Length: 458
Ligand SMILES: *[C@@H]1O[C@H](CO)[C@@H](O)[C@H](O)[C@H]1NC(C)=O
Ligand SMILES: *[C@@H]1O[C@H](CO)[C@@H](O)[C@H](O)[C@H]1NC(C)=O
Ligand SMILES: *[C@@H]1O[C@H](CO)[C@@H](O)[C@H](O)[C@H]1NC(C)=O
Ligand SMILES: *[C@@H]1O[C@H](CO)[C@@H](O)[C@H](O)[C@H]1NC(C)=O
Ligand SMILES: *[C@@H]1O[C@H](CO)[C@@H](O)[C@H](O)[C@H]1NC(C)=O
Image 1 (cartoon, rainbow, N blue to C red):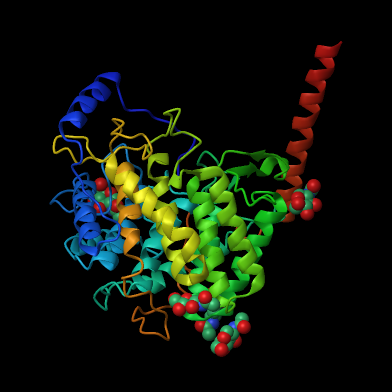
Image 2 (cartoon, protein in one colour):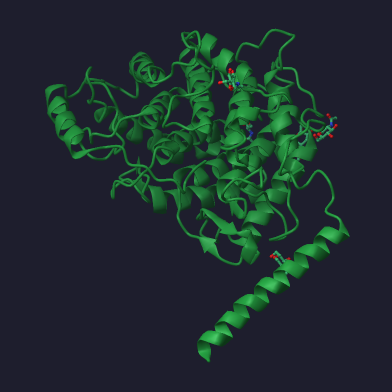
């Protein structure tokens, strides 16, 4: 994930042009959220345009990669959206390219760590591919051939590689953003990486019935709460610097952070047969979402949307909140009355701004703008797709587990033996000599800083 690399592609010229086109094609996608057929046909139009950005299935191209400016993680997120699309609509048009892409990116350890991506891959990036595989297992998406890695085992592999990265050298635990020390952001413990681990742990607990995953999810929830990544109003902040032992926070709030904790809490609620503590936490998170991210019950990426600074990554975040709201309703049905209206109102608003582009069906970013805002891309399409198709949650067949018809083959020890490559500090214990060396360097740096400050004062 690349929150620190903002990029704004849109030019004034294209806004003007798009607005003109928008006027020409208003109401290009009609949507009645009470009608299954209407939702399916709207979702198809939006999915088709999302997939039009992808060329990885073409001969000579790399399956699983989106062209620049899209990072690798967003492709994993997009294939997750296409698995949801198949699950909600029954339309298998994109299944072949989805399966091909997921299997091409598993990497030598079958854990979504392809060597080509070491320069861009953090824990959150890996998790978005792992969560796509986990959705495939939960939805009984068609299994790969037997000689290929299987969906559940891939998700377990991602989970296990990350559990091994639990880092007690600072902040009392948690995951660092980055896997490799040579990547920028290695000293940041960000909420989405930790939240996706919580998300996967809770879902694996429900799917497999294995308490170990729930124990990890509990540990993660407690750690995020202790550090303050979640505050007592259930606001989820962006992350914290581990060189300061997580004593200072970046207070930006993003939809997907609230979303990943919401669905994780819903799975923990389900795993504990409806425990009161998780019910309270779910209600708290919903209340936080209401306060921060909803305007007239329409989801808004408030940190960047209205000021028009959302980068390529951030333009896809609403997709995940929508996706996880839907999954929450399934695992914690008591939330239906509160959450379903958010999906309905947001989907209606999203469809109303899908009037851009050549065909007059490209979706804009700002759902509450009243018209197409000129912003187009994979993220805009994916967000509209997820929020529209999520309205099929009440007619979809319902997810499976290992004991209720799930057919994906798992491997509890997947990912525990793979070589996770350079920069992984947690495979080999740090020696006392290393620690002493690091301490000496720290002392020297402090002396230099203090000396410098002394000199300036004098
Ligand atoms: C890695 O890059 C090479 C060269 O572009 C490509 O042939 C290969 O398919 C890529 N592998 C993955 C898993 O992306
Ligand atoms: C760092 O933070 C953790 C968790 O809050 C705390 O337990 C630990 O004592 C702190 N370490 C230092 C050196 O302050
Ligand atoms: C939930 O209920 C099931 C079936 O009654 C039981 O086997 C399981 O132990 C319960 N789990 C918890 C955490 O209470
Ligand atoms: C757990 O989820 C299932 C559907 O996956 C649902 O039928 C059940 O009611 C949920 N349990 C609780 C306690 O809400
Ligand atoms: C439960 O999960 C843990 C962690 O992956 C694993 O070590 C253990 O073997 C699993 N237990 C069962 C019964 O599958």
